[in-house]
Image 1: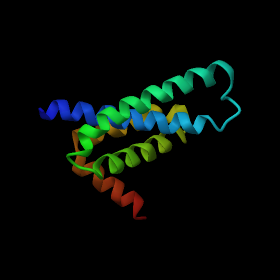
Image 2: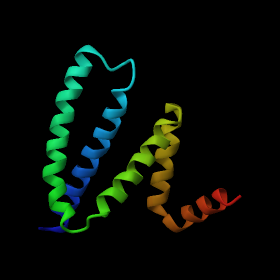
Image 3: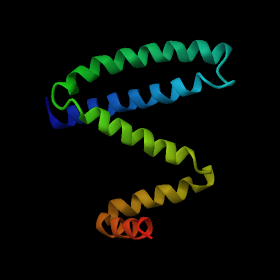
Image 4: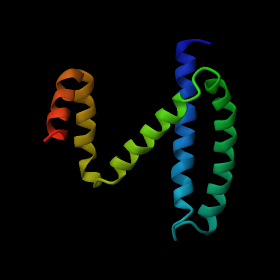
Length: 115
């Protein structure tokens, strides 16, 4: 299996797991009723099937990898959705800046977090 194919499978598994996690959280709200409830239940079943199928491919390589990555992704998304939508452009700019100069941005991050 090529690296690109493996990366796509890992991304798919993590995305399915993450979607499943947040959809499951939605079940415990007043918003979860009628049509949404029916559609999410169907979606959850499909996500679980897809995740299980793809998970087996990755789990044979690195069993703890998916748990570690998906936990990080869930925490990342929680931090994003916890902020007002008006900050999305700023968060996007921080990611772009990190891609341009990771070392410098990491220095800034460490300086701010260690104050």
